[in-house]
Amino acid sequence: MLFDVLQRNWDVVVVGAGLGGGTAGRRLAEMGWSVLFLEKGPFEDLQAAETTAERDALDRKFWAPPLYARIDGKFHLLEGAIGSGVGGSSLLYAASFERPERSDMEDSLERPHPTGGWPVGYDAFLPYFAEVERRFSVRGTANPLSSDNQSLLPPPPLRKVDAVMAEVFARHGLHPYQVHQALRDLDNCQNCFGRVCRRGCKMDGRTAGVLPALACGNCAVIDHCTVVALRGEPGRVTYLEIERQGERAEVRAKRYVLAGGGFGSPQLLMASKSDYWPNGCGNRSGLVGRNLMFHLLESIAIWPGRRLKPTGPSKALTVRDLYYDDGKRYGLLQSSGLDAGYGEVLHALRQRFEGGLFGPGGLLRKLANLPVWLATTLLGTAKVYRAIIEDLPYPENRVVFDPREPSRIAFEYTVHDELKARQLGFRTMLRKHLKLPMMFLTSGLELDLSHVCGTLRFGDDPNSSVLNAECRVHDIENLYVADASFMPTSCGVNPGLLVAANAMRVADAVSASLKQA
Image 1 (tube, rainbow, N blue to C red):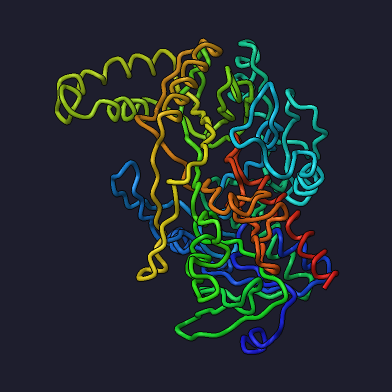
Image 2: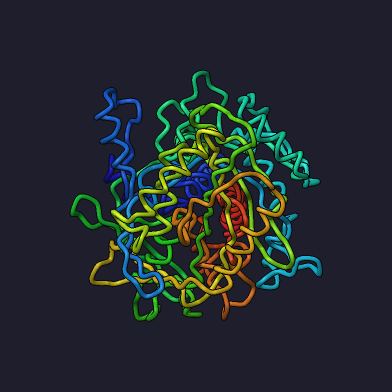
């Protein structure tokens, strides 16, 4: 069977079966095109694991290898950042599907855009946002600060603690709403945030992408498959060189869609050097892998002003009032689904003051127990909220490819002063708007590595971008990209909805090009 799959000349080959690849592949398969997914990770039966040990072992298969990072000149080996396997990182995400703001894409006098605006405006994405919300069963309540007509299903009832938090936020002049999540309404949902969902409640690149694509009958998946390089000639990819179980082979198609994520897709282009492409495929501008962005995360323990009992996982509320202020770009404030009691608050306080009197065994480190105990006794358990702060593109922040270690994921990143200033500005703004007991749990700057984006930015000028407005690689007529690497700026929201919406937009462009051929 594998031989037959490899010998076939497919309409489209999709490299990567995560959120972007799964969504694009499904769209193309439903249009009648033959689609082959090539996935580096496993395609497992999620129902097969019965014991806790078996489930934990299965979960570990879906984590990609560690990242080799150089941040502000210091080396770090980072675990648990991105996913691998059919479904990709979306297997492990919290399924937050929030629409970006118009100002994330468009320039205006009121909110100037750091790049002058995207090559495709907000209105072009609107029909795709609505379609993704339907396909992924996105549920929640309307954003009261938006005029968009959103296609949302009813959310689950708010728990008492979240209803109290919503009331408190509103009393302070904020506009909370129930978080938009890609979740089917199944009984006894286990809230699988940050782990694999085995029941199919959580909608991801597997459940809403690859599996429906396979049901079309004109689609196949090859897992444990490494795409070594793109091979071709000026202006065109002719085949993919792949490796599976130690064997090399070629895969051919009329169109190719890269969806290996913000790390994987630029690495593959850089690995594809040839006489025709001396700097790698599509790298005439020298920007492949550059303008790397994440999001800055802030974790805040917030006490609502009265004692509330802990309730367990509950990712319930979103607030957008702090998205933009005084010319500065910030982002969402969202429930994390976590509680913070005595132990969590004490740990966070100690983390802030390592060394000196607060160091291990230090006097103040021991004395910190008392005020933390008193605060949590009087105030009860806090709810932990997370703020997403937009990251901005800088060419020196980049994915690093080493041909001697082609499977290694590595990057270099400098934290710029403007990001540090915006972190402090956000904290000041939150305290100003929300006069409640709170504690910032983040001791330094925390980057959300799972939100990697920007490394193959799209634009109208081939000298300052890698992709055109349709996310086709400049100068390569049959190569497209359908993951978060296309983003010129990171926006102030979780990227899930935007990635899926753009993947559908890319699929439509691929289909149109096939019809014209």
